[in-house]
Image: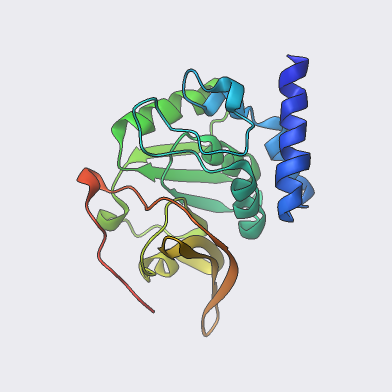
Amino acid sequence: MHLDTELARRNMVQQQVRCWDVSDPRVLHVLQTVPREHFVADGYQSLAFADTNLPLTRSSAHTMLKPQLEGRILQELAPQADERVLEIGTGSGYLTACLARLAKSVISIDVSGERVATATDRIRDVGISNCDIREQDVYERSEADTFDVIAVTGSVRAYDPRFEQWLNMGGRAFVVIGTAPAMEACLITRREGGVKVDSLFETVMAPLALPGGAEPASFRF
């Protein structure tokens, strides 16, 4: 194990993630042990732990989420060892791997077959086997499955009520709603009698990727 790499990883956790109010020991442990450098595009390994947006490929406009945002997502969702997760937007596969280490199982969907194939290989290479990564458009999803946790890794202009319909009772969904420069990270919790929406923090996140760059239909509460 390269000492410089491990120092950079510790610094990422201590100086970026913890400073964003992430203190859950399980989350900090998974960020310390899942090899983020294995999930970045070729040529960007030296920046794997930096507080910057990294392209998913050299030619891609889509980027990995920053470490501190990934840490907050994991902490707010708090996946448990007996819970099922749906991730919407596989991206690099790094957050997928972190979710898989915390939860019982993960289904991750992405509109890009290339991203699905790359993430599948990366996750297999690090010995994670409880992930099912599929090429799929979330707005065409018709499966009746429900989940305990849903992580949406791209922003949406307005809330889509289907997210809450895919939640089990007590389930949580993380979604960023709005348009730049003012977007709101929200935690959606399904409870007896309705849905609770907690505003967590303001952020900016790239829109959820859709086939052909199409815009999703708008859904509101």
